[in-house]
Image 1 (tube, rainbow, N blue to C red):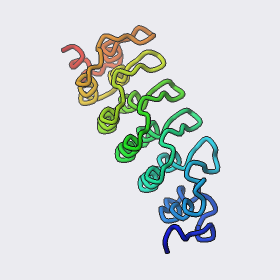
Image 2: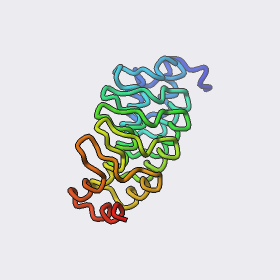
Image 3: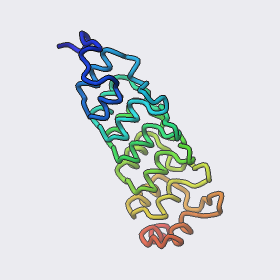
Image 4: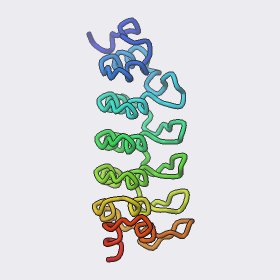
Length: 199
């Protein structure tokens, strides 16, 4: 049966939220065909279907929603964009698709972090690479004046610290607390970061 000919009666679940929760890609397609307005609005007004799919790590559904024209910048109740959520759930492929669909990579969440700050803090080097290639600013300051390098210095690997250094992050920028990346690495006893930041 062609998707264009599907109706609400063909849906297995009452809402797109249920179809996403169950990981039913076919039913999400039916839901979108029968109710195009559901692309960006589920039952919870603070959690779009795309954000739900990312949070539940339903990669195929997230990719379908992006391809179908979902709002790739819709924040959740904590001002986390789909890119922030991809970092939380470690979904590089979805993050790349979001960036290709013109997601804004330098938005702050409620904590004042960009997705790259979050990736650096979680030591997600592959995701950080995707974000930087997609336009994330490695020199972006958080609400507290720290760069992603400040976050990586606390517990990040040598690979994360080196990635950020390779993209021109200033070693000597001090956060609003007066901390540099090196002082954070020293306070955290992150030997790999200390070695790189002292070169």
